[in-house]
Structure formats: C-alpha cells, structure tokens
Length: 144
Image: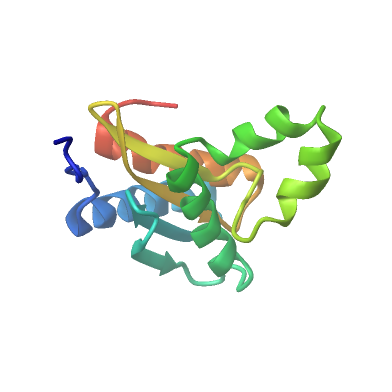
C-alpha cells in the first residue's frame, strides 16, 4: 500500500520572530514603517507586527503577500511578468482572494522545501521587497 500521508517541514515561531526582527531593522534603516507577516508552510499566520505609523491598509496586504508566497512557493513580484501577456489570466486571476502580484512577499525555503513565507507592506514595492529579503537572508543565509 502506498503511503497516505507525508511529513511536512514548517517554519517555527522562533524563526518567524527572527524574520520579523530582520525586516523591522531593514525598514528602520530606510526610514519607513511597515507591517510584517510571517506564515508557515500551510500559509497560516505565525507572527505579525505593525510598526508605528505603518499604513493601516498594509496590515492585510502584508498578510496576503506572505500567504501568496507560501501558497505558490513563488515571490509575489514574479506573478505579473507571468500573466502580463495572457489577458485571461491578467484579468481573471487577479480577482482571486488573497493573491498579490506585486513585490513584498517571499517564500522561505529550507532543503528545497517551502517552509513558510514573509510579507511586507507599507513602503514602496522596492522597500517592501528589501525588508522581506532581509528577513529571508537572516533565516537562510541566502540573499535574493
């Protein structure tokens, strides 16, 4: 009989806290206030913070960026280039709840497995991506 279950690697709460600290440090160094969300391999929220003065709308966007990156194992800024030339996808998939197609969400990988993701919102797309990249680099040692 084939196996009917598998073991899943997932991000710990301690790692999520480390990721948030790295993203906050990067945001502070750029003089921007952001929201940071970290999810596990199942895209469930593990840790979240909203820096003082971060836009309120960014709360949901940061969580949705992390969700998107974990659910698809793909950085959120990779979506638009994939769908830009396909009108059906461009105008259809963007209505999918929680899907974000702009920068700021990155998957976190270990041993080739997506174990979680980080989402950052509150700055420009480039600032959000820089903060998310700082979080991933702190955890994995790999830079984006």
